[in-house]
Image 1 (tube, helix red, strand yellow):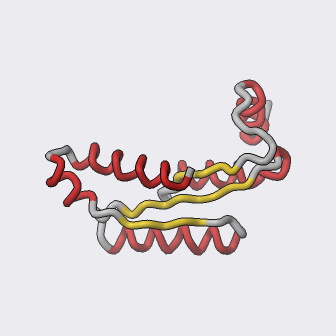
Image 2 (tube, helix red, strand yellow):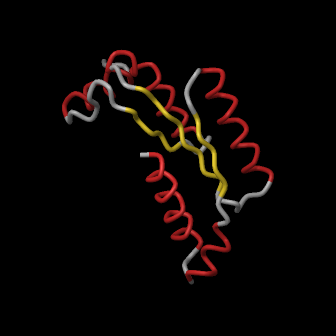
Image 3 (cartoon, rainbow, N blue to C red):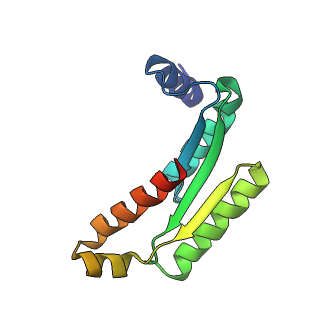
Length: 118
């Protein structure tokens, strides 16, 4: 049975997702799914000769809990030697100004943030 890393590597190879020299921007929330992605790609980065860059957006919705997530992501990246950019957005104000559902405003803010780093 293949390990998770082997399955990820097979998918990367099959779909030619990474090229040597790429800078891979990873949107990391601090939750288990994105941390698993970061952990796996950190282990595979050398094999593919890519550089990782973590992006974390505090949406300004969850108060102190979100601030703690941002701090955790920054500290983890620092300990792993992975460059990290953290920004804060006022998603509730964006939602109100654009008359959007909070989820859509958060998505737009996140895409704009990630696009600015790509």
